[in-house]
Image (cartoon, rainbow over all chains, first blue to last red):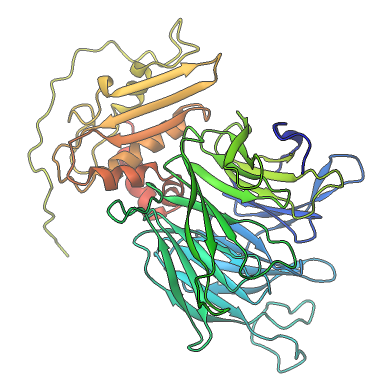
Length: 371
Length: 161
């Protein structure tokens, strides 16, 4: 366990380059590259320089979207990136020998796409948007290669086949914009968070080969279940150790316009099959952790989780010990000169047990911190 | 094709405007730092109603008393809170008016200011829904990228000649 439970995050670097609000930052699975995207419609890829704490934007991916790029997500092999845009499309970028190119454009949402996330196998994409829907896309096998030339420009330069995605399912149910979708780190289910103040758990039903809503986490005053009382902006699962028992406790943290965070915990219901997701219940509510909306949350492998909000602050939370509640152990005021739209932890943990965190702000900046 | 459009409020009540000195802008002596509710009102009062050829001031939609400004450099607290009053409780233009107010503030005020724009309590049948939309930064950002929406907003933000 870390020796300095209350040490505040230390600012390592400020990455400037975006010409408008930065909405999202996402680490490559090996932790060597940070992708950022925003209102300037670009995706920037930052890599560490040889000089200490110096990061350089080596690649700018642009001209794929006509409006804001709201979110970007890596595939687990680190060679593909998915980007969700307010122009209603999702682009999937692929690294080639010399550059990056668009391998597929997913069209289907009626208007703004607000989030995309890739499952741990790199096969399924979940997307969501203002049209209140959640889509599940499946990457079709592209291993055969060399077949008939496809009638498309994508991949022409490198002689690559375009990536082929099929819509595996389209789910309605939310009563408002769906703000984010987040896959479980190793099981075949994901959650969606919404403007309707609720969170839904979506699981694969292999018998019918479709996706179903397995649970709705909402604030039902009459039912005694306490949920969020405002738009749920984001969610993060607790990272799972590699050989964790599938029946072990699974935890999820969510953040909201209600300025609070809820930690949900779940265990497999008795008699549940391996395909059934666990049932979540409130483990702990942390009220008023920010002074305005809590826009983003992420959970580190070091055990802490962090939030960013429209009060320009970032907060860090930690359990005092096993079976102790989470406490807010640090708060950085003015972490950005504007709303903090995204916080995300690098999957690679430092040799000293420290976590590396990236944040994205309305001030057009990306910042890196150690905790 | 000619169409008859039904106005939500066909005959709005106009407020007699006080006699005003010519606009001195915001750089009058003593105000180079520190925004007041009067400064913010000056920015908003000339916005034109989407439905009527009158300003939000004339219609009583924005009032200086319903603007709260916090501007404290030492604590870095900078915020503007505007409550506006639709002319009728079922006004379908309320969200658009709120968006116009927000756009004017976004363009004219330093980006360090937190902006809250909402309909005044009890003045609209869909108060909660409208205020939730106006407070959602993602929806506002998307609206500002929508050419059709921005055309309507710009029409309201034309400076009167």
